[in-house]
Length: 103
Image (cartoon, rainbow, N blue to C red; front, side, top):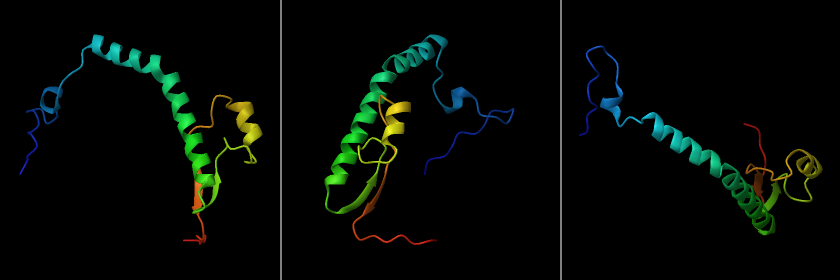
């Protein structure tokens, strides 16, 4: 059975007990790398969500899909106005034959 290391005599956990410490140069490198690739990752994120939403809409086992990036969505014009590069990755769907009920 694995056990946690005991805290330091002061009663708190220190970085040496819990794991490796990052020096400032390493932190800067990881943050800079993340920021540099963020636009590409977000564009791919939105493109993949649109692809999945279109696939779900075409699937006969899915009753409806609510995604702002789909042309027949009532919020499509707002999406194009405020988020022209993509609608994000949040969408709702309902399987065919499913009924809504209140909990």
